[in-house]
Image (cartoon, rainbow, N blue to C red; front, side, top):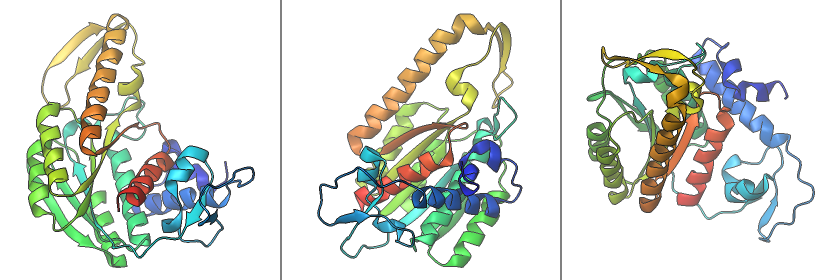
Length: 298
């Protein structure tokens, strides 16, 4: 892996202290991957496509073609109207969890949000920030000026996850605050009843907003590496449970798969992009999801 691309790996980004550098390195690593990609052996089905070349605007890459072929091609588009984006961050205490003591779910989400903000500003799209727990804690209206990135990063770098959260109520509030057709990018571990959250997502779609839901879990929550008798603690309450990890592993993984399937199905019905991701996944996967959605929807 080349030097810039190594910063797509969470374990490498963890070694970078400053959030502005984390965001820049993630995006530069992503762009380095574009520049280094091979183009041979693929016949494009649309005559208006051509191979991507260093210096081309990444806004013109056809991400749908890339998703199918892993080759980069650019396409000429009609003039686009910049859409306002909102980075919406869950501040619940459960987001502070990590098993291997590497990036917590919250730190991963912050890095991803910072990189997406960097990318949006790079594309001259207005971007704002919303943070919430049981209520809205910070609201930065979308702007496309370079200074907006510094403001967003300043807020993100000072955030600490704590206490409980009310994802659904705060999403409804964001829907009432957003002006015009917007892109809502939500970062949460979704540790709450899905019904009210899905209703809030429907509210955004009814208003004409596009939504990307990054369901962020810790690597251990996805793969359940525990064995023997383990004490599990609820990070948002004093409750503790002592369980036989091996005995419950299959049931846990089945329940998680069903939970994610439910979100994927219900989000798909209304056109919400549901992206399950864990803290071991390279950041380029999430950036690609954003770019595919951005091009497909607007």
